[in-house]
Image (cartoon, one colour):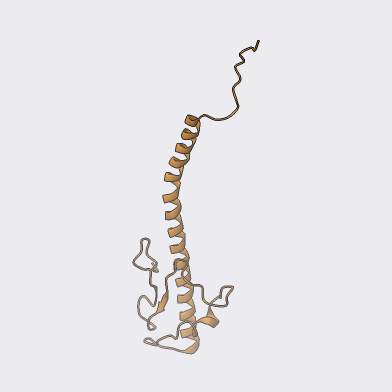
Length: 125
């Protein structure tokens, strides 16, 4: 005669798996917006630092070449010798995909990013 043995197979029940999935979903719902916000803020900070470097290079170029207010830069060729270039031997671009433009010497802002309307704005303080 066979004895009834209460053998329980190892594994997780459906309820346990659903609880784990719900917890992971809750954590993702909290973490993803914060990650996106932090990424946008770091891109903005990198863009502002690039604008500061471009501004310093423009001022150095103007002082060294004796340019006066109203001079229009040939961006980026005029500033390339005065700024640290990236690995592809060009002026670092906006990390969020914006484009830098130069105004005439002495105007404010002298350099700007095309993403200046985003939040946070890509503008020099």
